Image 1 (cartoon, rainbow, N blue to C red):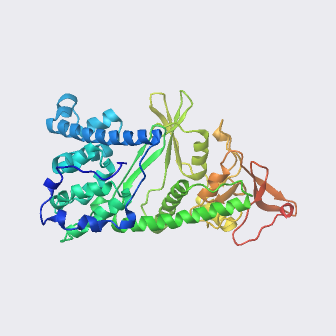
Image 2: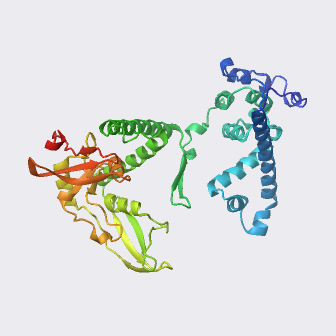
Length: 440
């Protein structure tokens, strides 16, 4: 957010005659159309935002200095028994992985690239510029890239960040004539981790490069589009009562469905694959239900667990002592699943094209939150196959799925949904055009 090109007298001293700085690499790294030209900032709010951003960059530079000093002195270990990264994680509530990255990045910035650190302290660049530069500065070309830091800093003041990052990568590729190391193709740079938030949410953090990046991006993009199309079809069937979510939710649901499909494929094709199992802890003293990590489970989640997967109940005391462990309970056995596959053929929600693989055997009667043992019978006439998407739709507040009897075919097993607005949606069977008499 710096206002324009900077002029610092000491920069010419850092350039080597006839060296990388004079090779024209930086000028050729960014097309003219990508150069950013902004009018001077005069609005008081914008002026304050610029000042705030500049100060934040200076604070980032100072933090890097302090982290390096603490790391060199081992003060975190001597006084607190932690590594520097461990101490940062404990005091700032930052994850252990990001804390290690922060300390490592600070060390490289301050020790290996002092000119880049000085630019950050002046507010000419931001921390994300530093991260891009350090990823490109592998051991073979780090010294060469250091020679063009002043030019890259100047470029950062007139270029968008995305264009600047692409320019840095292009320059690094040209400097690395051996081409022996490409961070974007190194399998060691693939990583994925997950953690559970204090509120029970699951947080995924990952980085994928090379072939994995291409595969994940293409498959996830394609499946996200399929789910978007599915929501669009639902919106038409429900006359707009079902909204089409944003890209973030669509991608999350696509990822979960891909996991489901992969697990199902492995289960059918190979032995020894562990079947998903949800551990539920029942506190005999308080009557509360929690997952294996102790996170409280709401009635909605319990309803979903009962309908969608495997449940192993444990009865525990308030201290967490296990009183008894229940048997593994499946609410639709193998023979029932086969019968449902023959009967329904796939998801029974009107207009859904999902086949039986990957669907859930849903209990159509309402689950009794006060006394789960009094839930409806696990009989095939009270079960219906639903894909995960329409299973979630069915459990939305205000939606009701129920058995329905067609007066013209009273023996037929038919279901219907009543939406919050009172609209009725009748079930389907794959391969059979089902039109209940009262729905016509």
